[in-house]
Length: 262
Image (cartoon, rainbow, N blue to C red; front, side, top):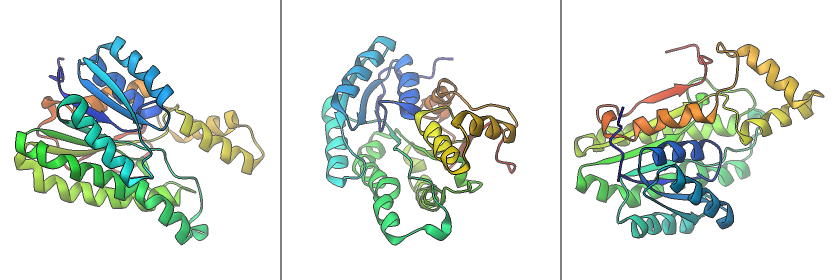
C-alpha cells in the first residue's frame, strides 16, 4: 500500500534511537521529509544520513532536550525553517525512572511533568495553527500500554501519561474538522534500550539477570515475546498518513495482547 506520505514533512522527536527511530525509518521509507531531534548532534547526523539512504527526501537533525521549553520552541521553529512547514508531529521522549506510588515525590513530578506533558503540548501548540490552516495535520504521541492498564513500579509514567492522554482526546475533537488527527500509539514491551534498562533495574532488585527478568516477562505476554521496533514504526507511519484520515482520538495498542480489555 502506498501510504501517500511522499513529500509530507515530519518532525519526529527523540528519533536518534528506539521507538522514535523506528517511526522515522518507516516515514523515510515512504519518502517523507524529516527533521529528527535528540540530545547529541553527532548521533543525529549519523541517523540523518541513514534515513536519507532509506528514502527520506531530506533529513535534518536538530539537537533538543525535551526538558527545556526554549529548546522545544527552537526545535519547532527549526523544523518549519528546514522543511517549509510541518505536516506531521511525532511526540516522543525518554521514559521516566521506575518507582512505586508510595515513593512518589513532588520533586519527581516537577521534574518529569514538563517532559511528558507540558513541553510536548508546547511544541504542538506552536505547529497547530499552520496545520489547521492547510487542512492537514497529524499529531501522534508515543505513549505506553500503562495508559490503559497501569504498570507495576512505573508510577511516574502511569500518572503523567494520563495527563497527555486527556489533552490528546480533548484536542482531537476540537481540530478534527480542520483535517488534523490526534492519536496515541501505546507500546507494551518492545525490545529497545529503554526496555532493557527497565529489565536491568528490576533484575538488580530481584538478584537476577536481565535475561531472566525478560524471560519471566515473556511468560506474561500472550504473544510470548517482546515486540520489535521494526514492527512498531510502520503502524505509526500509517496513522500519520492520509489513509488514516478518519482515525482520531484513538489509542492503538501494540503490546502482544498484554492489556486484557479492549
